[in-house]
Length: 540
Image (cartoon, rainbow, N blue to C red; front, side):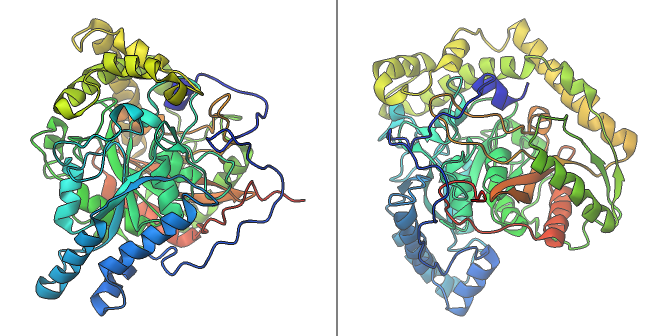
């Protein structure tokens, strides 16, 4: 049972009418795409932005103005993507200061003056709020920067704004709709507006795909970077737990939570990843990254990065993932093999089937402990101070917070005991044995593998606020529960609906995965910019 199944409870048949989050029924059937004005920065990579600022073609202020105009044109007017909750009111001032610093001292690095969006569960101690999309924290400011925000500021990035998300990172109730939050309503997929953007880093993936920013920082517990990146034809990196600090990030599970980049290319994702790493005394998990992380993953970008690699092919069970993604995956294996790869196929990891409900138990216990500690740290400025307060707030504001799905996961977590409970400790042990010792580590040792490869997910299904998400058949659980790294890259389209391919590795193997993913990307060159169609590009 993967997290998306765990969160949305087994689901749905039938095609309920999708709405735009305000109750209005969205149009279905063939229609012309809205005329989107040309955008100079569409799909422009970070290296080109940086070179443009160095030459004087661009300024950081000009980039901010252009991206904000793009957001205003597409996010709140038709096609109304609803990917961004708020723009940093100080973004222009920060950009001007960075322009001046570039002239007087030179750039700090590749991110100097580059606008980056953050998921709205990442704390910033500025005039932006951090709310996880919930009205319970609306209007409240975090007392200090997250480690992520500090690292980005040090690198000279402009924190452009906060991206919408599945409320509470999709850990609140069953049958949820990915990309919906009480604050931001329903985020839409830019490839087909009535299709799910997936989640929970919905706004980050949509914003990156639609060129609202140079790149974005999302978070994942199980699938929340990988799935929306796949659904929005982006590159997403889910790092080893501990590579990036979680301090100042609204938590779900200390065993599985991590932040990571979402971008349009492997190079941009690698550039952003290097800026986020480092040991943080406020997150014990980062101590293990000492000597195993990098501040620069650009050296891994090799076009011949597939040559002589040994990659294990994990075949998804029939019917678990849409046939179009399965067929494209099988076809692309030939491309991978022709690049000099030794494919070991099929690779089976039967221990994953022994997980049972262990992942769900771990999340349920850890969420209560983590969210209570986080809310206490927000101090008196927060409107709520515990999980119990959150449950009560949602009940009191049910019309705004619970119109489409409930808070069963909150209630289940509140009923759990402490992290010394035998049920919890046994579940943690089972997770590690099934996905690490008897899972990824065992199969990679046996077959001397550099990575595993699998379909990321199927093409995105319709937004359905009445019944919740349809299962896209994601494959994120293995790496997520292990706490090991994975990267998804665009693989193909089914009537214009995107899906991706995933590479998974051992702990701290980000450089290897980036090398493989970059070579695959360069060999296939699959990604296309979104066209903001009202539905899948089906034949008339």
